[in-house]
Image (tube, rainbow, N blue to C red):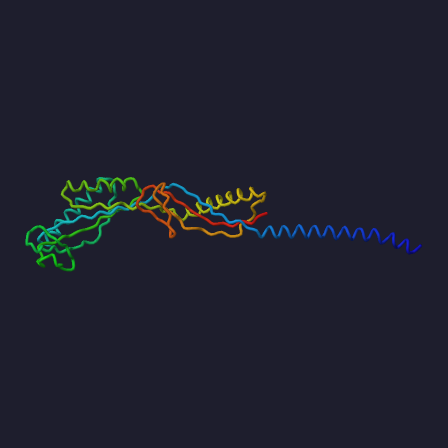
Length: 260
């Protein structure tokens, strides 16, 4: 009787224990699959582009005067300086925006042919083989520079400054340099947009295999490209275009996501 009673008690216990083993095995198996799947990653490259307009511009121009007398050349240059300044003021630039460089003096040497006032060489250090070595005059030059947030006005000035030639000023107008001063804030915004693009790409790949994208495992920011508007030029070292008023900024990120 006792054996029969013990058997009746053991069978339910064994059954419960067996069920426990099965459930534990299923839990362990599911956990293992989840861990194994979590170790799988997908790496994608995301990018984002945005068109911007420069908010700072710098223009440089160089004017000069020549004379057989150094003193006279200096006097002429001072007169040119006043003419250039009045011209720039008439274009709407403030006095404090107009900056002048120091004066550069260059000796003018007579050519070996002996003809004057044709010079075949200009040098501040001395004559070369094509000159006779005789100083016949001096060229004094000075650079004028304007920096302004009114980029359109600077752009216009760079094309019109040669109007000074009509006032007897020998001047060279350099192409303006256009910059964007809020590049640090823009980089943060662009990296965020590029990361969103990377996640979208990863989701498209994961969905095609019935998986889901998990957390970010690693990320690396690529170089920042600042090109003239709509340019697709790329450099491993990055590009910072200063020749264009309007620009296209591109950010690239490489991101690895876990797979769920």
